[in-house]
Length: 255
Ligand code: APR
Image (cartoon, rainbow, N blue to C red; front, side):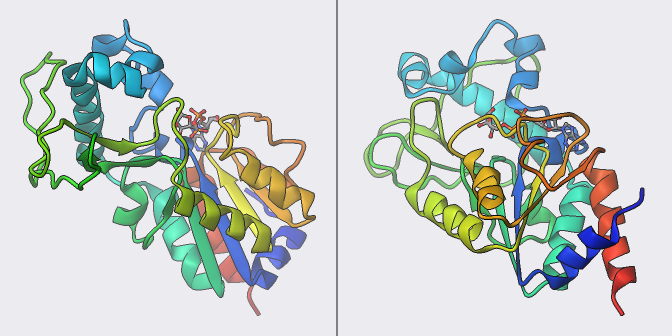
């Protein structure tokens, strides 16, 4: 894959790079997107049943079972070359801010410290009432095959059921994460938008905001997205292929 001299120069000159990621960055680790995961055991369910406060109130064991199933898949997965290349890129520019819509922990496991998490995490549940953190038992949950429902644990402080610390339908993004992401979008010289359909708002505003400021947007995606018209560079391909090649080309291009 060839990268233009202009793109490599923009990367070399950038003082602050923002990297915005979505489900596509974890696809090569075998983590299905929310929609793709609604198959097999889960094919008769929809997002409002499994990922909304109303769905959780109606059937906490079903919703907790769904998130434990997803968390188990993530714990069995490994970061892929895209996660590693993004972590390594941080050493190649003065400042890098990673913003993710993903709820898995593969960026951290690849070495990216403290990504801004716009949609929360599968790995840090909290009480559904008093919000106290709940510490999950270590290791990979061992569930009976074919089982869907798992009773959520109870909060040690107030006894209410524990829920995943993820952003559900109708819920606001965590304010501090959103503020930090917007600040990065307003300050960066260049933003990567990697593996996201850039359709789910407000997160999808971020690359559009960068483009409006006249800063560079580099999209990495095998498919067309709503962002194509805004991106200065559309690198068509799988993130696990494109990102390591781009990092290599950037390093080679340094004097
Ligand atoms: N490399 C890069 N991009 C890929 C790859 C890959 N190997 N495989 C798929 N993609 C792209 C797809 O072409 C698509 O554009 O990843 C994108 C995934 O889009 P979505 O499934 O819409 O995921 P995302 O943009 O992260 O969704 C945002 O929606 O489901 C909710 O809250 C959930 O955070 C999620 C949000």
